[in-house]
Image (cartoon, rainbow, N blue to C red; front, side):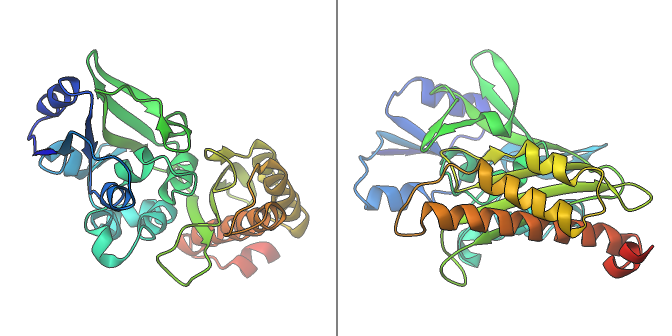
Length: 296
C-alpha cells in the first residue's frame, strides 16, 4: 500500500484517476479502524490534509466555507461559526474523543456514509451544499444527495468533496442537534435529530427543517414534522404533532443498539427537544426567555 499527500486538488484527482484501488481520506479516523477490522487495504491512501482549501474555515460575505478535511476542532473552536450554527457545531463536537476531533472532519463523516453519522442531519437542516471537484470541474450538490446508502455515495471514483457552503442563517434562526447513545460519550447514535427553525417577530415559527439520522439507510427529512411546527408557537400540540411525524418517518432496523419501536419513539422525543432548544437559542439571543415569549 502506498501513501500520497498531494498539495493541490488537481494532484489528488490525478492520483485517484490513475489508480482504481486508491482512496482518499480526510482524517483516517474511519479508514484505519476499518482496515484493522479486516477490510481489504487500498492500493494507495491519499491524504487530503495538505491541501489548503480543504483545511480552511472562512466567511466570505454571507457564505461560510468549511473545508471538507478541516478538523472538527476547528469548528468547535471557532466562536463566530458556533454562534451561527450551534447545532452543527455540537454535532461536529460529538465525532469521537477530543483527540479524534483533531483529525475527524465533516467531509470524512459524510463520505464514510454511515446512517448514524452525527454531522449529516445537522448539515442537511442547514441546507449545506457540498462542493465536489471532478474531471469536468466543480459541481455543487445538496449534502442530502451525496449519500445514497450505507457506505455508498453519489461520487465518482475520481471526485473529491472540497468544501461545504453554508449560507449565513436568516434573522431569528437557530439550530440544534441531539442524539441518543448507550454510553455517555464516544458512541454511535441510536437516533440523531437535527432541527432548524426561524421565529417571526411575534414568536411564531415561520420556517422549520427537521432531519433524522440512524433511522433509515440515509438521513431522512421530515416535511410533515416541519409543517406541524410552522405557524405554531411551539405549543404542546404542535410539538406532539412534530414528534409523531418524526416517528412515522422512520424506517429503522432491529439490532443490538435498539429495536424498531424504540428508535421510532426516540426519534419523536429528540425532534421535540431539539425544536425547543433551537427556539430557546433564538429567544436568548434576542433577550427573551422562553417563558416570557410564551406568555406574550
